[in-house]
Image (cartoon, rainbow, N blue to C red; front, side, top):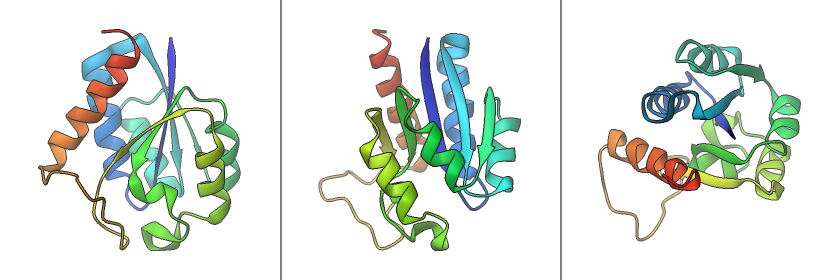
Length: 138
């Protein structure tokens, strides 16, 4: 079983969409850990079907090192993004994690990814889940 850690902040909308889509597409083939920068984000991901959840900087820095795949918006790699919720320690931990990173290219937080085609949010979610499925060989 593959272990996916999803990092999200603010209201947890990106994380919630990822959890729901992973559950629909992979069911119990994945263990999902919801890692929120705040309790609202963690709660949204748990309600969407994550197996476990934790909140805050320490929870994120510890758990991304234990995951096979880390998912979230591209902003999780930029200190002070998500209205300041992503700390430098979080970005270092995510970047140093041996986990594969599958990130949603939301052009917010003054981050724009060149070469990324403009698609609806739901298409990015579907593409991210397809990448996780490919990791499982399916």
